[in-house]
Length: 385
Image 1 (cartoon, one colour):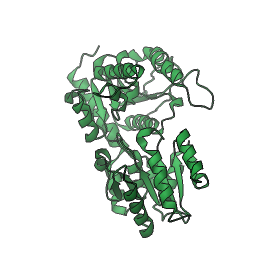
Image 2 (cartoon, rainbow, N blue to C red; image 1 turned 60 degrees about the vertical axis):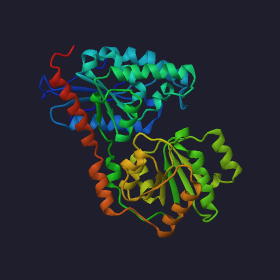
Image 3 (cartoon, rainbow, N blue to C red; image 1 turned 60 degrees about the horizontal axis):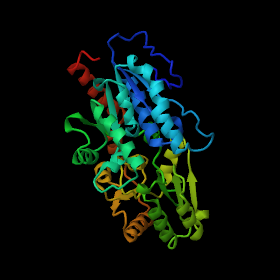
Image 4 (cartoon, rainbow, N blue to C red; image 1 turned 180 degrees about the vertical axis):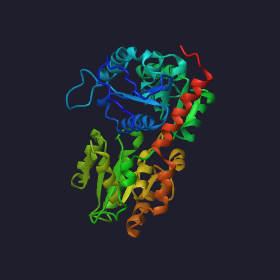
């Protein structure tokens, strides 16, 4: 494997392998700050850089800095994140202009960084359009949010290529006129090796439901807790494991007020092999989101053999297979009845569905699509600035 390095100092140079040809394209994958704590964004950047480096004729580097002035052991404040994104990172990335052929911004919420590089040498991955909703008709958001969205959109429009995960995201981008269709390239995300290797298992003897995501409003976690509360009236042994989030004050109050705290466990910072085992033993994985860009927990759960109940929204319909039960994200009765049916039948995802998931969602294919887009740009514009 070609080397993939974690960049922590701005003076780190590009050292191509001794066997590399001078004209081998060099792609710098620019990731979020470590302290952002977005597992899906970290996973996408890590897997892209690693799989790009495995492709013949490609040099790849993962560029990830630490956020200065971040509070130790706590989430950075909004001010610290803004200072890092708009002051620290531009300074640290400036020397990179001459060190790589292409610059891939792995998260659209860092899209303003595209403006640091020539248009023909930069791409942005747009996972969803949430960062730009402040600009949509009727949004009525704070002026600071509007200004942020404008800056991010300006950066994304500067990019030569804008990648997206699903047709549903593409349609939203085009519907709101964010980027011309000619610049869009679909590159579905993949399933990490840890989820492919885990053995398909019966549900754990003490059944638990699983939710893997943040607790931001679009994840519909308040509704998730209400569904769990209803289900426990029929099965007092049922538990809920929530991975990756942090309860809001309202959610914490609900857990305490309904006496659910002893039956709910929240975990963060799990290694992927640990999460794979949790997926594999879950009775049901719940994905009640109002909006998603891709829905990694859906395909990860299916890859591990766990049945899924998910919101009936276009993006999840697009990525799902057999083993996914779709319900309206506000129909609590239907969610309760659907989960009860799966628990009663002890349903699991069959082997053929797992194989199809593995075949369709590959990080290697994801990397190959992105590499091809950049090499096509290279062929079309041989005299890059």
